[in-house]
Length: 449
Image (cartoon, rainbow, N blue to C red; front, side, top):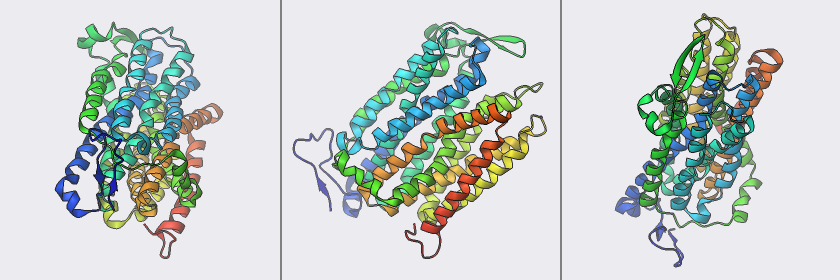
């Protein structure tokens, strides 16, 4: 049944009726509105992910331009955006039914200017205190928080039969923001042509050689893009007339499947987000002392790229074969890849390609699970609860960069390597393989999906 909008809401922001399951309404114009909303919010989400992960690539270069930071401090910088993102996603989970898609997307996109400008200024002075860098790293997590309002919003615009495709496209392309940050940064920080706008170069030293670097470009190039995205959001987006107070939305926490799906999504997106943040520093710490050591940023972007692509591809497949079976494949693949990594963490040129290959396996299987779990949740829960559960699980999984960076940093401090962490992750994957099989994937499961 369609939902009528209260009269106090203006038509410029709120749709009067919305029922995507009604075929006639869908074909009469609903489909056009839904896809316009998807592409606009996806563009904004790409920038949100890119600004969220810009610290992971900036941190790798900070020692080379004169910042005196320890390995532990560098991992702390990559961890802080995840701490902020997870916390802010809890808030974002409840925003759409209260203030609507248009306002949430527009203003949360504008907030990305804060970390972009802040980092652009801070890296130009190697005397910037560590506490200021930590604050700016935390603020980069503003972008990570947006996911938990953007995705539930998208789930309201599409019928159930297309939610796997729609959510897979949005999350997958949005995840490409990580790769964009890690791929574009090595190029744009050497672009002196825009220095007249962004400021003077720093001296970057590596292996005794010094070159000019504009590290501020890694953050400041997002500023015009953010302004364009916010403008598009305000012009293109409208809000679905679905209302719920925060207290009404809290009923999802009485459902055991909320917690089970939280664990499964922490396995999948937690791995994607956590390793996306830590991958460049892991390469630097394991292989950085080799003669002719590999450049972390030349390889780090491949992981998020593969994970994002597999999320898009398997989002469509999940609509056909079901989410639970693909989540099972994801869990088994993550377990095997995590164990495989431990065989190739000896710092040598011979082991490096196998280390990268095993890590890319983790990203590939995490992408599959990111798509399949988002197919499972709309099938397990009714529409209003599904949006809340999607937002909540995404919030918890967004702590991945914080948890993974901290635990990997602790593993390096204790054992001079990351293997202890990977074996712990493998054990966590095994637990989730069992959860998914018992509740969702096996014949006679409680919630087959």
